[in-house]
Amino acid sequence: MSRPGRKEEEVRRILDLPHPPVPADLHVRAARRGARLRRRRRTLHRLGCALLLAAAIGFAVWAAAVEPWAVPPSATTPEIDGW
Image (cartoon, rainbow, N blue to C red; front, side, top):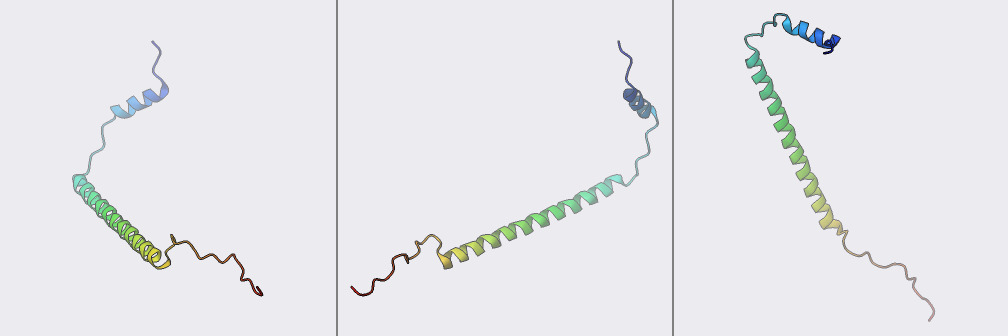
């Protein structure tokens, strides 16, 4: 078999070292951060939905006022004078 690579030896050496201590309040800090991120995401989602709703209402009001689906009056035929 071939000898393990240099990187594999480095990884094994790092894994054989004693593990660093974990702070006692790590789970509390992680829960706070998760709650903060969830609140931020929920707020951004609500703002995005409100913006989308405002855009839809604005479009509906514009469409009702302008009626872009209506055919514009034909103004291509000039008036004939002198007949």
